[in-house]
Image (cartoon, rainbow, N blue to C red):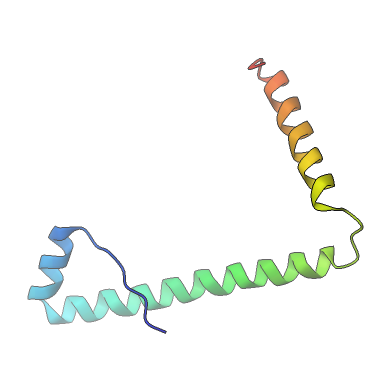
Length: 79
């Protein structure tokens, strides 16, 4: 899979001039992005497994979310 990344102009200019630096940066980005994706996929799979037997509906989750946020707002005296 190919992913396009938008870099600041000054970095782009520097990478165009220095082939070795460009190679190092590309490898680092590939490694870091792959690691992040693996961690995200692991969490999604973990939560899917934990919630497989859940009886909660989307509406239940939205109600809990609202109640938690209201409680936080009250404690911080934002309400």
